[in-house]
Image (cartoon, rainbow, N blue to C red; front, side, top):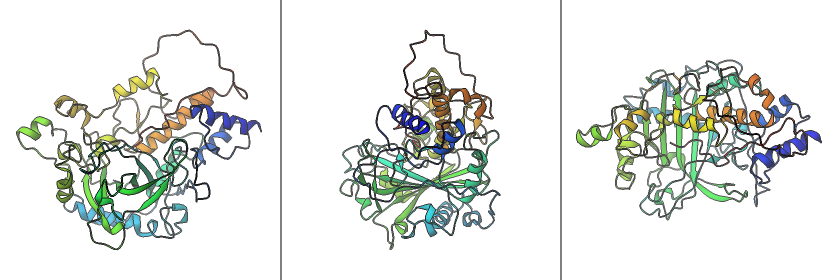
Length: 456
């Protein structure tokens, strides 16, 4: 009973007062037991009106040894010479079993292959498909008939090579080890992005795959349609170690299935640091470290966004047109400590991380954001998490929970040196808030339930 009450208090207070679906209670209230229970929790978000539907189930298939990679089909395709062929080889690999009707992306039902989920997203995953909130699309970003903002949600899965990497970090669910971390060549992430835009708003969505998603704050559901599928591949042929690619659904394409009608949008492997507004507008410079499908690019050129990524860099329709795929993902890192929302540390962290330029005509800001860093961390004295925002956000969520629920364990649950943020000036302590149970181990913290984990 003591552990169950502690668990309920955690979700009630961290959730900002909203009653969230309760994960199975741990057997006791000790740190390791509670951390393991949260690690294995699929979703802590509410569900309303679809209680009888099948629920999302977290799936951790972490191989103990690095899987064989020589037979991965995309490794036999030159990504620079044939980017579309490279992307189609990956799509075929990802959809071969996962897209079958008897699996439908429930990777626990895929008995032929090993795929896994990223840990520590239970506070942001909705309970039906494990989807998380994405950047919303502004009016007319997707189509000229799109007159209002549209919601976008996404779910990601990882192949066995990437799952081996997750297993190296999370061998102990109460102690993620990130020191020196990197994925092995052949690691693949696949992310499907759904939108609540309708075919009347975005005609090329006609006939796309539909899911019922518990995307509303109270757990209510909405119908969403597959718009975009992203892939990221650890591949030593990239100067930064990674290729990021995107597909979009297009109803005008031939094919018997939704997957046949996914068309490659682009592939990127570098930031094109010199592609500034001046170079783009005055000299006609183009992106050299990415490929964008000209047939897709022409569809968006007349819209206010003009390009998919800034000045013709590769990006997806859902993504920020001032950014690109790789420059967003290079921000993945471990601070070695919690960075709490609205804290002085968060404000400092935001100034340290490269950020999307608000003004794309500010050439200095563009060059500061679009830069190649290879395997380095974007912030000195922090641990790179190898371009994986899901690793970064998951580790960050764990550190936030430790700092708020078990602060005495914070120093002993990191194997990297905590970043030396500027010490905050001392402030007078407020009277402690009365908490019913285990108040010595629990202090209220804040997690942004609407955090845009994959914004580009």
